[in-house]
Length: 345
Image (tube, rainbow, N blue to C red):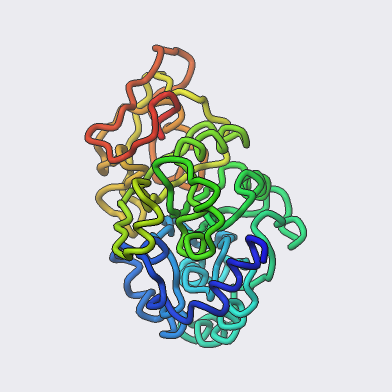
């Protein structure tokens, strides 16, 4: 049985609900933000029981957006997004496991009614993350891409990220949660079907992830949060040995950014106009914009808040006409472990 068939078997036949998981790696360890909790409560119980995710990768400001949920499973996040994008938005969920999509499709009408839509604004496609073109997803056509603990399952991760930045619109956002490792996984462990299914065997070494993104043209990404995965299953812990795993939520944009944080003397102001965040907006784990309070920012950060769908919620003072050298963007008390030779990530 090859890699992908093994994953399909694990998620299509072996796992009947998230209670069947042997670790917490594929199971969300953080509560969704308060503004999402009322939506989560409206999700059909069967969908919630079959939810396998390690975070809550749903950014704000989604009304009217076209969103792609990569590895949507039975559709929990896709249905949440269908509420957030509203009647003018559209959600596409893709997954390679037919049985998961069958469950998602069975509950489309339930969620259409629950969210009071005249017609469903979500569709599900059977296919692979590495082959979005075969699913009819065109260049520069997607506003936001999310994924919840799925990229680790792909045997061709660089191809996945190439496809992501092909289909994102300029200024579009990738926002995802996944499991990463503190070192490269030995091949013997990477081929273990249980470790793969539990989101451990295919976890990317965090430095290799940084290198992959650079190769596909993304020179600055941002860590939102990071939580260590605690392994309590004796046999799995024995196999893994001293490798550490973390669930990390990351955002990146399709922008022409520099590979270092450069100082142009720019200042950013958050206007407090995002309904979900009237007082402050978190760009990443070390950029918290307080409403009306000036924050000195690097050129990349300025572009992230002025050349994306967030631009109307910010005011930028200064241009890039004068360069002052490298910007000290070292996270204060940061929880990240990525080396500091890149940008603000």
